[in-house]
Length: 142
Image (tube, rainbow, N blue to C red; front, side):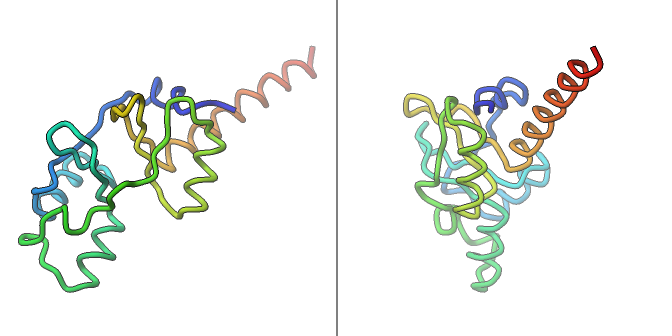
């Protein structure tokens, strides 16, 4: 099974982040513009949390807060679960399933180096299985 570094190598390590004093409305605009479901929260170069579509739905809308007045720091998830480039894809899938999360920030030496989503993990697993099947088919036919 592959490692997180394999996903990062293919996907790239572009990270979209905002400071915690950004309004939720501005964060949502960024998410729409970038077509992403999560933003990493970075203050003064330090990773402090994550803001996801679920955070928006559960911590803002359902609590009657206004997105133009609420700051990200009020609704972000602090200290989210993270992985390293050496974490296995299998461990990531287990973490995402057990914790019911869709995004995993990737940290290396206390530095944020990427973000993987459940879609990235599933895509990797499908590609890996496809490769194995093709190799087995070649082995059988030769």
